[in-house]
Image 1 (cartoon, rainbow, N blue to C red):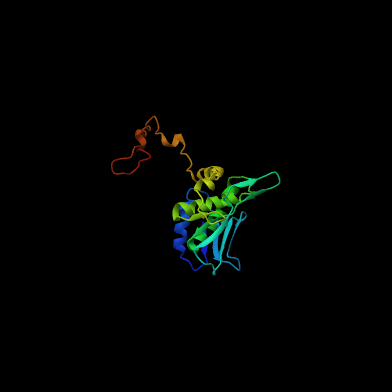
Image 2: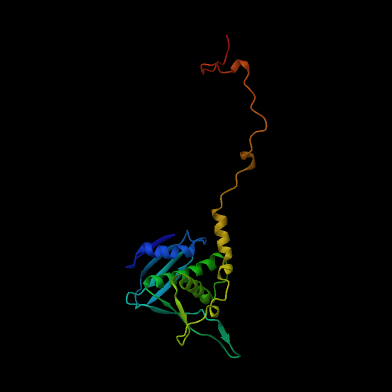
Length: 210
């Protein structure tokens, strides 16, 4: 993965936060750029050809930052469907950058797994939220500001949904098997040279005898 950091954040710290969550998933061909936003508080883009991820972070954001997500389950009645907006509390710009990157990275995994990419914003948000909650203790709240139990938003097998992407990565990096014939010694020792061409003790090879 090529990683370019144009923010006033430590590159080594960003990579240390990102790498545990992409290990084992295909990412070698990705070109990732983290840069200042031109106006929005944040944004992200995943492009497939060529494979690139852009993470844009606003310089004027205040932290802790409440990011609005689509991780709540969808509900419906006879006329329409809706989804409550849960927020995730992020401590600093590093956590916001990680959240946006992981959201876009899951889009990439969906593509690599050859899944339908339509209406997958909820899954992408859950993939990012799961990492922030597990590692950094981020808090998920409902629209009234109350903490949300994990079961209310973490109800999908996210890894299983894109498992084909992981399998493809393993097949690509697995070594080629060594041919059986090359591993087995010859059943018969080599035949000795005729007396006429046996090398003498001094190391010279006599081709003809006089």
